[in-house]
Image (cartoon, rainbow, N blue to C red; front, side, top):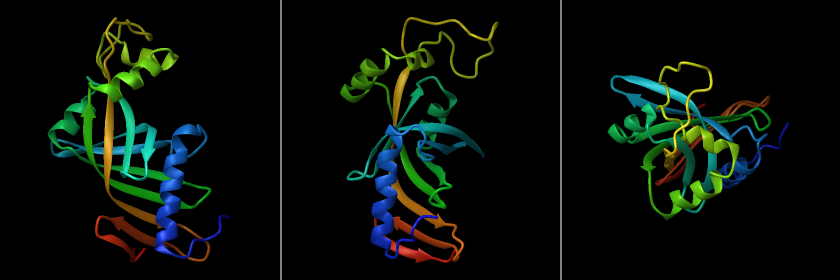
Length: 182
């Protein structure tokens, strides 16, 4: 069991250290997170893969197909929630985020240039949008990439620690850090 951190400052630093480490470590439990967005009057959720984390700017980045239904949801309502769980730490994060879909620009071009050389590029080369009905299991490949970045600016982090000595909860946002009733 991990050592318990005593101060809010140490917890927040550790949360960001783990988020920054997650994209490079395929075994890190925070590499995959659940993103919840609004779909009209309903909530919609899916797993996304964290590609970058910037602790200084409080931003997280993941990739998507620009035709995905989640893109329309994010553009209609750019607020969402990311949820991550680490069994090793006993930590759950709920990150309230402002979502920005980026289809072009230097950062998108740079990421695509790196990604298009990998097998993952096929995820963004489909002739059909995500969720389309296929005639066969593989689907057809198109020639144009539908690659986009989603930048999630973290507005707040709701941190929950499940521990044998008792649960603890805290919130980190632009106003500072506070302990909360678990």
